[in-house]
Length: 113
Length: 117
Image 1 (tube, each protein chain N blue to C red):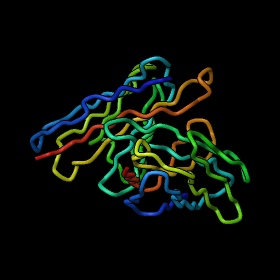
Image 2: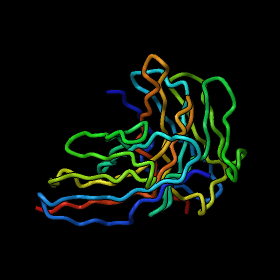
Image 3: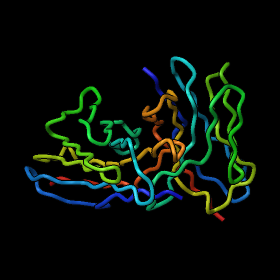
């Protein structure tokens, strides 16, 4: 079945460092891909998404490109801030109405000043 | 933006008791709600999908008689863990999908940490 694999954390960075969180997927058909973020004490929030190959999702300085050839959707940010400390989840959806998301295990990011 | 309220955020109960978790969409109508559980350092695993006014669809391996889901209105879904046991201790998260008018976006509650003693 469909699945998502993302790099295990925790990832610990200093402020202004470059961030990459790897995510690869296995799916039939052409899924939509997502990155969700969960800040401490809050619910999951959509960070960015891409719905077809070569699309680039971006938000709040984060970006990820849907790479069909490598089945990847790596999350990147050029300069992280302390406020980016959170758990990041990569996910996919079959795209049909009512289809649930399939999540990776989540990667904890901790940024220190 | 749209908000999903999940309550309680944390519950501790004795083995054999039942626990109800509520999930409310506060400013939109949720035609579909999903319930997930998450064990430490594991993925969010889909438990069931419920559509307002109909029976929930459970994922393989999830006991429907143990995890009762009710989606009686377009703004409320409940998950009841019946006769809870320590192995049911987990983090439960609901998510709600809006109607077509809300572009069918998916919103998440903040989760419920269940600890069964």
